[in-house]
Image (cartoon, rainbow, N blue to C red; front, side, top):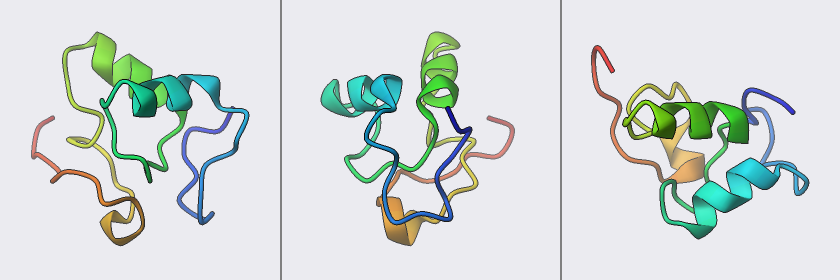
Length: 68
């Protein structure tokens, strides 16, 4: 699995962890983070969007937070 899919238009279809995060509403449908990264952030009690350096114009993710 990849840590992110920022250079792609969409995430790999076989990233099951990312699909689960999307299905459960933890990340937006266009999220380009890797599923393992997203799930790790969720396990820490953080939104995956807070520390993501991805292109918001592609993913429509939430805002980044400093120190997240």
